[in-house]
Image 1 (cartoon, rainbow, N blue to C red):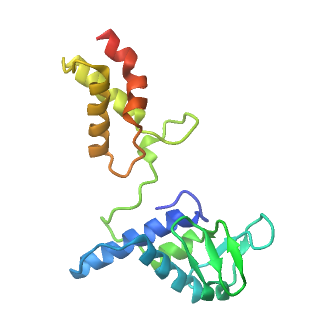
Image 2: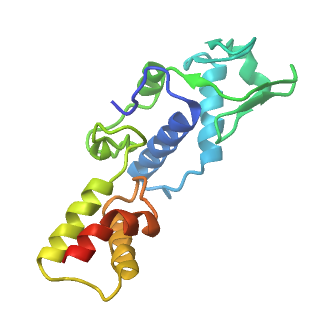
Length: 188
């Protein structure tokens, strides 16, 4: 399942649609680059024809189903907002039915799904982060005697390692890594 919610926010859906469109193009041999704006336009077409439902705060702050006609003059933006130029109404956020999206853009076997960062979930409060995996790599390197001359350089190497191993993940900054591995670095 590519989403953590049955009604994910629009930016996650737009990213998923973009990836599915790229995968479909790659299968036909076309150039596989799809922009987020192209994904927004395709999502708008599906919401306009009613095959994908959306909900948002049309009147107040609670989400309600958005009539398909709303999308005739409203293009969703990559930040998850939408402005209907005919009604002069702005949605600062909206959610999309995950069931509808998965039906319209099924994920083929073996195709990559958007990262929900499940491998970074530790049960600790806050955003998912690969910091525990980075710490493990730091311990491994230090145990093998791989210790650069400065902590800053060590943190930068670990940052580069994390970017290479988790390209879709939320990688902490080198400074954050430095603060986290400082005790390990000093003990070795």
